[in-house]
Image 1 (cartoon, rainbow, N blue to C red):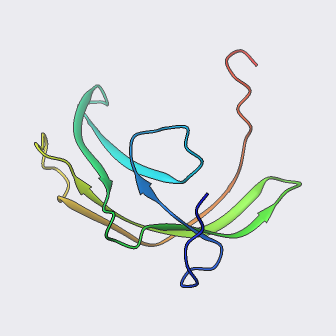
Image 2 (tube, rainbow, N blue to C red; image 1 turned 90 degrees about the vertical axis):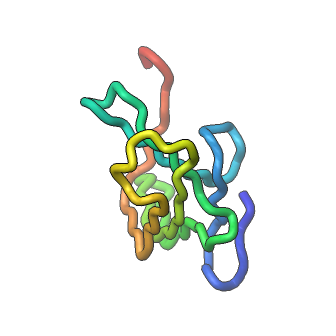
Length: 107
């Protein structure tokens, strides 16, 4: 993972893209409409903005992780719903969760 500069200690640049198997943080938002069975707008990060995830604490024993994040996302054209603004700015975001290992189907 590509750690970014001194501005954000223990922070990693978040890139745009559809889910992939790259070892780097990525972000996208896909809006769903009409009970979740109709696709709305798609949003991807803006490369020129300061998009990052910062890990402040990780407990290897409990797999608990805490940190902050910031993202700027822009709607891709053509737009289909216009329910949300064309630019979404997520600032001062915080997360606190446990990492659960995926064991595959049926496992």
